[in-house]
Length: 494
Image 1 (cartoon, rainbow, N blue to C red):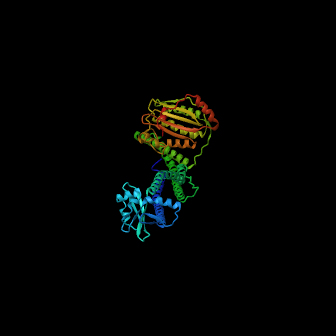
Image 2: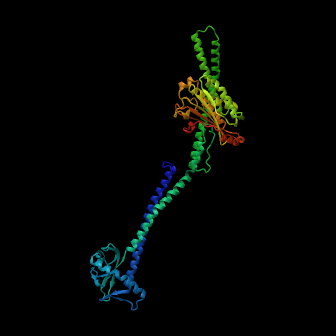
Image 3: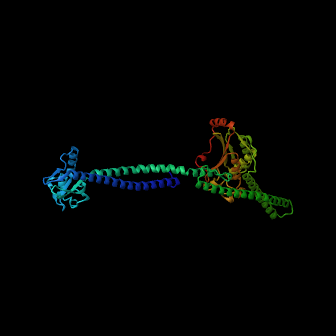
């Protein structure tokens, strides 16, 4: 879970929104519930007081029924009311203190009912010394002699408060559950809402400089996503146009430079045939001719790469034995390597058939071998290893030379990239050889990677698909062989 992701932020926002909503809703719901239960409790208390007033009248000795016959249910109701009432005169003086229940007498003794006894009507709350709360209703009653007294009828608020507290506890305990559900639902809803953007991102990741004709299609046509898709497609179209112009420019420049360079090279060669040239001028012309040859190679490589990227370079593939091609090229390069006492060691190569253009593939492997010879130390060793794995043939060319810095590894296959221009110039490098290798290998549906570190040599690894009928047999050959790849590949990866 990435806390910086939009999905996380949407889920948190959704959770916070529902939290605030649930808290406000719960507060409002609790207030409504409290009001309703309070009103129901008060109405019940009013009915009990009216029941008392309608059926009982005070006398000098106590109370008497207004009707001669008292139903048992009414008698039981009066017995339940009796412990919680007080009679006072209109001035609030208590009448017949010995007649009341335990709680009432205790509250009268503690003067807990002073704010109730001086009211002749309405509702009042009182709190006993032990903390219990009561609610009283006040009603005027008339005796047989016409004397008026005030009935103060009360009920304990314990049950009412318990109901409120239980409701609040249930709500508070449900808050974490609701918030958890809201967070989970928000997480999945955010994923569903962002799914079109992820689809756009996955399609965008497939777009490279060679696939600028790829367009993103929004299947569900959401307005916001559609606008993003249209903007992105427009940007890719502009990039495609810019790349096309750049490739045409590179090809045109390279093509236009070939003729004047050929003329200059020819004129220098004609001038060198003169026997009357001073030694200084002859040395200068020879140096110029070397630079012109180098420029010719650069222009030729640029033109080749520009045509390759423009799709005008065609591959003529055929079934070839990769083992024979590698053995032949290694033998050719041994002459060049011998000049610096460098040994090319070819380990036992398994048979493998691949579908490839032999001319282009030879050029790519030659560039890799030439690169290994240039940067190997005098008297060093270049090892060539080939293995098979899951229908892929893997070629590894290892040298024990100066190596490549980690900061340069990501760029060594770029056009005209040279980690050390002076060193590349001394070795005759143009900065285009590895770019050409990359294009050739990828044009054959393969991959090329480099593994290196300063002063630890370098491994260049090429992977190419085997012919379908060769896959299983190649795997069997690899399983029975004893070829061991360079351990350097296991330590660093580009």
